[in-house]
Length: 272
Image (cartoon, rainbow, N blue to C red; front, top):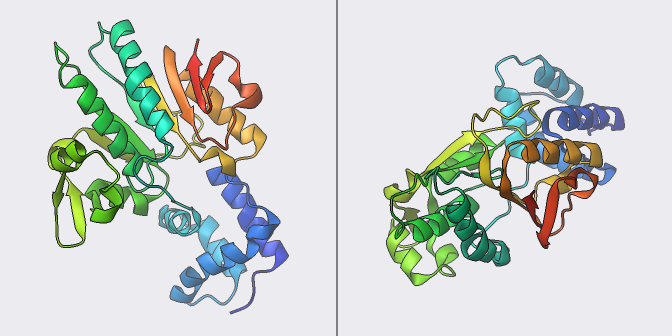
């Protein structure tokens, strides 16, 4: 197979930037080659120009989906950056319960669900908080990702038992059951509370009819350039309720797009 030329890499980089918002640096050239090479081998292509033509000419969407599944990085685990979960439990949810009590509907969106650890953690926090509240609230949440393969893993909810050992014992007992000697599975009663959907943050408009009280969009915008990040943040601002919270990754900032947000704590902002 021919190596990935600079011009071919630039075409693929432009395509990825336009479709996914991901800004690939020159240093990513070898990574892109190694991750996309198996696709070319499977399709009997010997150069990346043929692959680029196939990618841009495919009308079914399967080629783009396959590329996304190959090049996106999905590193996550349960209770990642626990200070955010503590803030949600101790500050945000009590405030939302008081200020939006007439709605009886907590609307939370996990905008980068990856393989499911984050949205399941969020849902367990929600269930614990609202289980003693009357009258009952609708506690369903939304989890989205651009990668179909990680969404499939999230929907199945199967995890190595060792990965859940850091969770509270009551959560392990209530929300998981042993599948085999190495794996546990999320119980159906919790799975049913999360709607997993494929969504591209680069879409011109988000397809939501109601605004959210909480948005978690963590460790995604580090891959965006400044204009792309600003557009995403403004779209999230528009679909947040006033008084709602935006949680981003600790290595991320909202910068100039943060007008209308109040800084609460590292990587936590509130819509005024």
